[in-house]
Figure 1 (cartoon, rainbow, N blue to C red):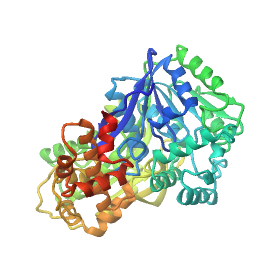
Figure 2 (cartoon, one colour; figure 1 turned 90 degrees about the horizontal axis):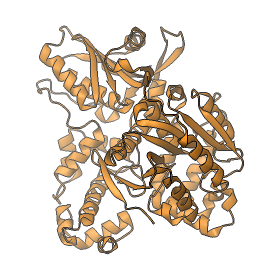
Figure 3 (cartoon, rainbow, N blue to C red; figure 1 turned 180 degrees about the vertical axis):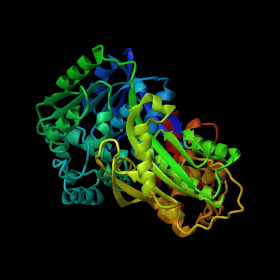
Figure 4 (cartoon, rainbow, N blue to C red; figure 1 turned 30 degrees about the horizontal axis):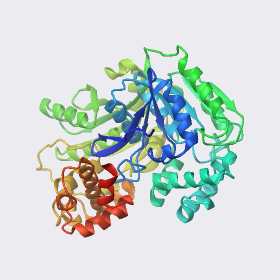
Length: 556
């Protein structure tokens, strides 16, 4: 029986999830590429797999933002945002820690979460995952640029049809038309063609090689020998870089774990989960470290230092060292650190000061949540020495984890780590939406309302939700950026135009109100900025593939 679909919010984005099973521990399934947690229950093979898992665990399913039943106001997201979605779902169901089961692309998020939050991770299990999605000399099994382009072309021209060669994902089911029809429908219901395309392009840029060594939780890596989509060598490569990881090579060529020799997959998972492999104390974890040096004739006074500390906290960061001219903070992820840095640069200008900033991600002792070691200080100092005024420099690892952030990166310099002597490639960060902005130096210091540009945009749309006359021009004025800048920035981080985003936010809010069942369709239309209920119904059907009245009947 299909579990009830529920929602939790990560900031302003609704994340759909389901919970089932009677086991004593929690297991979160992180799906690959695109998903739809309702359509999962239309596949007998997958239902059987979940049923067996539910006997040994409380299983938690969710659709990442932009896919399936979760909000599709944005088609792009960083690994960090997806990691935040995972954490939001765990919090919603009261799961303090869980086994993470990541499939394919979901393995990247699972790996980053396990390295960043080891105390919330019992163990890590993966199937058919990859560390990179584009060829390089140190990772020769990934597709070349030409091969990736063929995938882009197939998505653009044949999304969800047999012409996409879906049989390559499940060769053992190639002649099972019922299964293949379900798979095509599952993919189509999981993402639109444009969303599938931008997600695929984003995956091409992801690289988690540098964080694999920071995973300390018990890990099981499973891969099939002749998987066409992800090569067996990729599984071996990943397992070799995770201390103590167990690698299991399975016969077969299916990329999907719920077809083929599924009993073996389940047996390995059950045996691994049942072992006494929980590690309670971790001495190290993955940290994002941001440092800034203020270029000014005067040190910051006490109130200004306190303001900078509060500003960092708005981005879920924590200042752990500050002397009025330099401060160092830790963040939950690189996106928050970089966006905080971009905001601080503009804030410093109001004080007639300039900043140089560096962002690094590394495995460090857990105590570095309270102080920075001399080794880390040396590395951060070397990065800051290379930065020009009002410039943010990030390491290559940070750049790879910011795929989907809408930021541009340009290779800057190469330095040598003063502790290890290894070379570190640095990249400068460019946020093109903030180019040519005139900063009013008489403007009083103000804390940001949100921790990202997208959150600011969504808040302004929410504030005017029922105003049918709210326009892109008004949005630009409130954000203090030009129409061209807004168009470019939103396209980069959501793959939507401002008009499309405003409409999508209104329609998703309308869907929430419909599911609450307290208002009629006309009232909901007016409350979400639609003066014409008929036009509202047409727009709703175009967005969700179902009319408002049909959705209401479905929920009765």
